[in-house]
Amino acid sequence: DLALNAFGRALLIDDLDGATHLGLTRVYIQTGRRDLGLEHLEIAISLRPDARELRVLAADLLGCRDKMRALDQLGAVLAAEPDHAGARKGLANLIRTVVASRMHTVSHDDRETRPQPTFDHTQVIWGDVEPFGDLIQSTIGRGCRVS
Image (cartoon, rainbow, N blue to C red; front, side, top):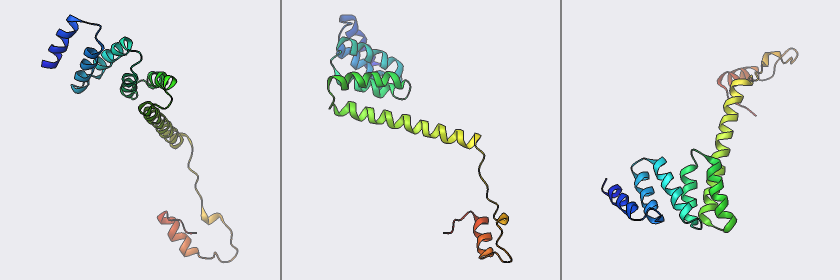
Protein backbone atom coordinates (compact mmCIF):
# COMPACT_ATOMS: atom_id res chain seq x y z
CA ASP A 1 0.00 0.00 0.00
CA LEU A 2 2.82 2.37 0.81
CA ALA A 3 4.44 1.84 -2.59
CA LEU A 4 1.11 2.26 -4.38
CA ASN A 5 0.52 5.55 -2.56
CA ALA A 6 3.99 6.81 -3.44
CA PHE A 7 3.64 5.91 -7.11
CA GLY A 8 0.12 7.35 -7.16
CA ARG A 9 1.47 10.69 -5.90
CA ALA A 10 4.25 10.52 -8.50
CA LEU A 11 1.65 10.03 -11.24
CA LEU A 12 -0.23 13.10 -10.01
CA ILE A 13 2.95 15.11 -10.49
CA ASP A 14 3.85 13.61 -13.89
CA ASP A 15 1.59 11.01 -15.45
CA LEU A 16 3.93 10.68 -18.45
CA ASP A 17 6.89 9.38 -16.45
CA GLY A 18 7.80 5.92 -17.74
CA ALA A 19 9.77 5.04 -14.61
CA THR A 20 6.70 5.62 -12.44
CA HIS A 21 4.60 3.35 -14.63
CA LEU A 22 7.34 0.72 -14.51
CA GLY A 23 7.42 0.99 -10.72
CA LEU A 24 3.66 0.50 -10.61
CA THR A 25 4.09 -2.51 -12.90
CA ARG A 26 6.46 -4.11 -10.40
CA VAL A 27 4.24 -3.38 -7.42
CA TYR A 28 1.14 -4.77 -9.12
CA ILE A 29 2.96 -7.90 -10.26
CA GLN A 30 4.33 -8.50 -6.76
CA THR A 31 0.85 -8.18 -5.29
CA GLY A 32 -0.62 -10.61 -7.83
CA ARG A 33 -2.46 -8.05 -9.94
CA ARG A 34 -0.86 -8.90 -13.28
CA ASP A 35 -3.52 -7.23 -15.43
CA LEU A 36 -3.00 -3.83 -13.82
CA GLY A 37 0.75 -4.34 -13.96
CA LEU A 38 0.54 -5.11 -17.65
CA GLU A 39 -1.55 -1.98 -18.28
CA HIS A 40 1.11 0.21 -16.68
CA LEU A 41 3.86 -1.65 -18.51
CA GLU A 42 2.14 -0.95 -21.82
CA ILE A 43 1.94 2.74 -20.87
CA ALA A 44 5.67 2.70 -20.05
CA ILE A 45 6.38 1.10 -23.43
CA SER A 46 4.30 3.71 -25.24
CA LEU A 47 6.30 6.44 -23.47
CA ARG A 48 9.63 4.76 -24.26
CA PRO A 49 9.12 2.64 -27.40
CA ASP A 50 12.86 2.08 -27.78
CA ALA A 51 13.15 0.45 -24.32
CA ARG A 52 13.63 -3.14 -25.43
CA GLU A 53 13.80 -4.62 -21.95
CA LEU A 54 10.27 -3.36 -21.27
CA ARG A 55 9.02 -5.20 -24.35
CA VAL A 56 10.75 -8.41 -23.26
CA LEU A 57 9.11 -8.08 -19.84
CA ALA A 58 5.73 -7.48 -21.50
CA ALA A 59 6.20 -10.58 -23.66
CA ASP A 60 6.97 -12.60 -20.54
CA LEU A 61 3.81 -11.35 -18.83
CA LEU A 62 1.70 -11.91 -21.93
CA GLY A 63 3.16 -15.31 -22.80
CA CYS A 64 0.76 -17.39 -20.75
CA ARG A 65 -2.38 -15.49 -21.83
CA ASP A 66 -1.93 -13.86 -25.22
CA LYS A 67 0.81 -15.51 -27.22
CA MET A 68 0.29 -13.37 -30.33
CA ARG A 69 0.72 -10.12 -28.39
CA ALA A 70 3.80 -11.60 -26.72
CA LEU A 71 5.15 -12.50 -30.14
CA ASP A 72 4.50 -8.93 -31.35
CA GLN A 73 6.53 -7.52 -28.45
CA LEU A 74 9.43 -9.89 -29.08
CA GLY A 75 9.26 -9.23 -32.81
CA ALA A 76 9.59 -5.49 -32.22
CA VAL A 77 12.73 -6.07 -30.16
CA LEU A 78 14.28 -8.58 -32.56
CA ALA A 79 13.54 -6.38 -35.58
CA ALA A 80 15.63 -3.62 -34.03
CA GLU A 81 18.26 -5.88 -32.45
CA PRO A 82 18.33 -9.45 -33.80
CA ASP A 83 20.94 -10.58 -31.27
CA HIS A 84 19.06 -9.36 -28.19
CA ALA A 85 19.58 -12.21 -25.71
CA GLY A 86 16.46 -11.57 -23.64
CA ALA A 87 14.19 -11.44 -26.67
CA ARG A 88 15.75 -14.56 -28.18
CA LYS A 89 15.29 -16.42 -24.91
CA GLY A 90 11.71 -15.18 -24.65
CA LEU A 91 11.00 -16.30 -28.21
CA ALA A 92 12.48 -19.74 -27.52
CA ASN A 93 10.32 -20.08 -24.39
CA LEU A 94 7.23 -18.95 -26.27
CA ILE A 95 7.83 -21.43 -29.08
CA ARG A 96 8.52 -24.21 -26.58
CA THR A 97 5.25 -23.45 -24.78
CA VAL A 98 3.23 -23.41 -28.00
CA VAL A 99 4.77 -26.66 -29.27
CA ALA A 100 4.27 -28.40 -25.93
CA SER A 101 0.63 -27.33 -25.74
CA ARG A 102 0.02 -28.45 -29.33
CA MET A 103 1.65 -31.81 -28.68
CA HIS A 104 -0.41 -32.26 -25.54
CA THR A 105 -3.59 -31.32 -27.42
CA VAL A 106 -2.80 -33.64 -30.32
CA SER A 107 -1.88 -36.57 -28.08
CA HIS A 108 -4.99 -35.99 -25.98
CA ASP A 109 -7.20 -35.82 -29.10
CA ASP A 110 -5.58 -38.96 -30.53
CA ARG A 111 -6.37 -40.93 -27.40
CA GLU A 112 -10.00 -39.91 -27.57
CA THR A 113 -10.65 -40.41 -31.29
CA ARG A 114 -8.25 -43.03 -32.59
CA PRO A 115 -9.00 -46.62 -31.61
CA GLN A 116 -6.04 -48.39 -30.07
CA PRO A 117 -4.78 -51.31 -32.15
CA THR A 118 -4.94 -54.68 -30.51
CA PHE A 119 -3.01 -57.75 -31.48
CA ASP A 120 -4.51 -61.12 -30.87
CA HIS A 121 -1.55 -63.48 -30.93
CA THR A 122 -3.86 -66.50 -31.03
CA GLN A 123 -4.78 -65.63 -34.64
CA VAL A 124 -1.27 -66.38 -35.89
CA ILE A 125 -1.11 -69.93 -37.27
CA TRP A 126 2.12 -71.75 -36.50
CA GLY A 127 1.09 -75.18 -37.65
CA ASP A 128 0.95 -77.92 -35.05
CA VAL A 129 3.10 -76.16 -32.45
CA GLU A 130 3.49 -72.49 -31.60
CA PRO A 131 7.14 -71.84 -30.77
CA PHE A 132 7.67 -70.15 -27.40
CA GLY A 133 3.92 -70.11 -26.79
CA ASP A 134 4.21 -70.04 -23.02
CA LEU A 135 6.75 -67.18 -23.16
CA ILE A 136 4.63 -65.13 -25.57
CA GLN A 137 1.53 -65.71 -23.48
CA SER A 138 3.21 -64.56 -20.26
CA THR A 139 4.92 -61.47 -21.72
CA ILE A 140 1.86 -60.26 -23.60
CA GLY A 141 -0.24 -60.70 -20.51
CA ARG A 142 2.12 -58.45 -18.53
CA GLY A 143 2.51 -55.87 -21.33
CA CYS A 144 6.25 -56.53 -21.81
CA ARG A 145 8.04 -56.49 -25.11
CA VAL A 146 10.45 -59.24 -26.02
CA SER A 147 12.72 -58.88 -28.99
